[in-house]
Length: 574
Image 1: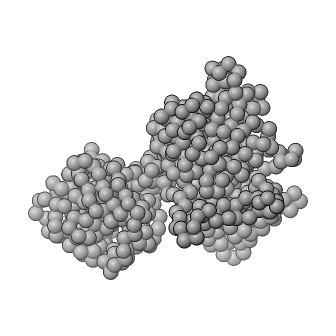
Image 2: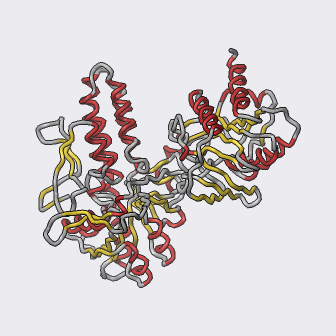
Image 3: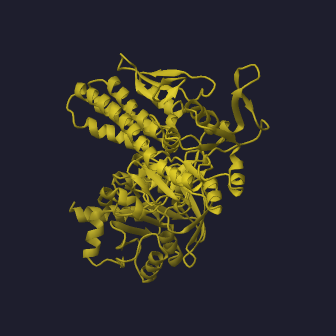
C-alpha cells in the first residue's frame, strides 16, 4: 500500500543488506512514520511483544523473519539448540494469535530439510520471504471474495454508499500488505463502489483511531471515527450495512478470537439482523480446537494501557496522560471470543463459508485426516467461573510434582496438532476439588494460576461452578463424579496412554461404554456406576469412548501415581 504516495509493505529485508529486517514502527502512528531496523532475534521478539509490529498476519511474517535472524545469529556449533530456544522465545510473545506459532513451526520444518548451517541460513531467508509473499497474496484473494459481498449490498441500496463498521485494525498494517478485513473495502473502493467506513476507536490501544483511520485516509476511502460504544446505536438506526473484522484465531467450528470488544459488536449486529463478517487467511484457523470461549488462550496485557492514553497535545508533542485516579486498579484483556452462532460469514483466501465445522472443512478437506483423536480442551458443560487464584498448599505442591512426573512420562501434555490431554485433581473440602485448568497441557510445571477450584457441579444440569484465573478442565464432571461416589477418594489422575488403554481393555478392566463421549454427563454417570461397585483403592478404569483415556483414583496422590507407574512397567515388561 502507499504512504504519502510511496509503496510500502509492513516488513521487508533492507535493500542491499539481507542481514537487516525493516519494519514500520506502529506504536508511533499516526503522528510519526518511522522505520525500525532489526538485526537479532531478540530485536524481533521485543518488536512483537511491545507491538511495534502487530496484527495476525504480520505477527506470523515477523516470527518467520525472526527465525531467519536467529539462523543468521546462531553459531555453527549448537545451531539447532539456538534455533529451538529462539522459537520458544518468539512463540511466548503473543499467546492468542495462531499465526505466530504456525509460522515458527513452518520455519523449523523447512530448515529441517537442510544439513548444514550455511544451507539453513539460505533456506531461512527464502522461507521467510515466501511466508510474507503468501500473506499478501492471500489477502488479495480475501479482497476479491469479500468485494462480492459488498457488491450485493450496493446493488440492493441502488448506488447509495455501503456503510461498513470496523473494529480494531485488520488492515494492511496488520498484515504484510492489503489486510484481511480491509481487503474487501479497498477492492470495492478501487472498483468504484460507493462506501463509507465507520471506524471505531478500539480502546485501550486505539488501533482503530490511530491505524485504521490513518491507512484508510492514505488510500482515500471515506471514513468517520466513532467511539467504541456508538456502534450499537448506529445499527439500531439503520446506519450500518455490514460489520467486518479480522481475527487472531478461529476454531474449526467457527468461534472467533479477535480484539476485545468484537463480541459486543457481534451481539449488536445479531440483534439488528446485520451481517457480521470475519476475514482471515487460512493460517489463522486453529483446526485442533472445536470450542473457542474456553479453549483459546486470552492474552492479558499491561494495565497501564487502560489507565493511560497517548496522543498529540496542543503544542504538537506526543505525550501520555493518566485517565483515572492514580490508585485505580485496572485489568486489560487483549481479546475476546465471539461464538460461531453470531458470525454470518467467514472469508479466507479459498472463498466464503459459514461459521460451522462442516462449512469450514468443505474449504479445507485436507484437514479432516489431521484432526485429533480426542477433543481435550473442549468444555462440554456450562462453566460459571469467578476470578481468583487457588492458594498454594503442600498438597497442591505434591499434586503439581506428580503431574510433572506424568508430563515427563508423556501421560499428560499436548498432541503434535496442539490439542492438550490429561489432568489431575485432589479433593479440597466436601465434594469440592482442585483440578488443573483447561488448556494447560503444554506446560511441564504449573503455577497456582493454572489450577481451578471446583466449588459445585451438577450432573443433572451439566454445570460447573469454579474459581480461578482459568476455567476448570474439560474433565471436571468426571472427577466430580468420582469424588461424589466415593468419599474415600482424594485424588484423581486422568492420563492418556495407548499402552495402558489397550492392555486394560484386553484384560477386561472396568470401562465405560465406547459410545459415551468424554466430558459429558453420560460419562460421569457411567463412572459413578463403575465406582459404586466395591473396588480396592487405588484403581484404574478405561474411558473406552475417549481414545487413550485412562483414569486412576485413590485415597492419596502417592498411591495413585505409584499405581500408574507400576502398571506401565508391567505392560512394558520391565
